[in-house]
Length: 245
Image (tube, rainbow, N blue to C red; front, side, top):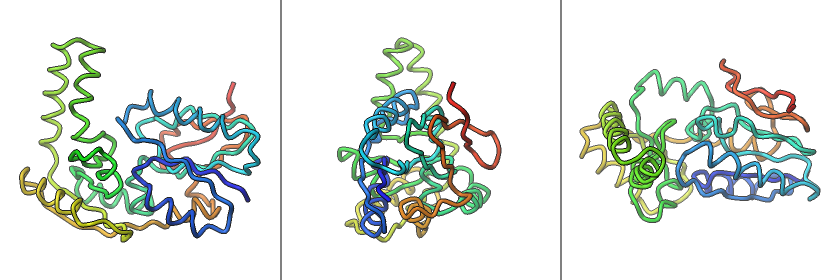
């Protein structure tokens, strides 16, 4: 098959690694992660999906999760879409929904650190926080709030965000085993110590990414037929396909 993979750059290393070993012809496009605002991510992804029309692809794979609803509403035109059944990219790093849930049950207040996410953040400190954006995006987020709501409300929202950080108790570095100079893990340790969080290093499991790129699309993936769109399912499947009106 000829496949196109549209991936968040926070998964750059895993995606490139498995794309190079895929038995299929694979074209990869990385999308800048920027801020995790669904209303910005969705049109960017749809434009890339639409641009793939007529290029001879049998399927378009999305290295994304639901990501706060960012992928809900994406429409398959004439080419099927394939996306993991995942809340966010943490599931793709951990390898399964079951392991994801196990880590949440173990400690809901976990701040996640990942190599690609941090090193592609213009040198700023950042963390991959489940379902939330990154601490290093705070200034940009503040400016967005000021523009949208005014300074007074923006200040209040940022105060709430700061309080939200206080609920975290654990910092986890996800070791993907694909290079890096150790600076990201060192930063995770520093942040954990500064905030009084428990620090853990967890081995990633990239099998979900591998299966996405090798075409092993079982029940862990949603295949969206042409003319249908991705929607939230509000159950353990996370997402489902519905006819696009």
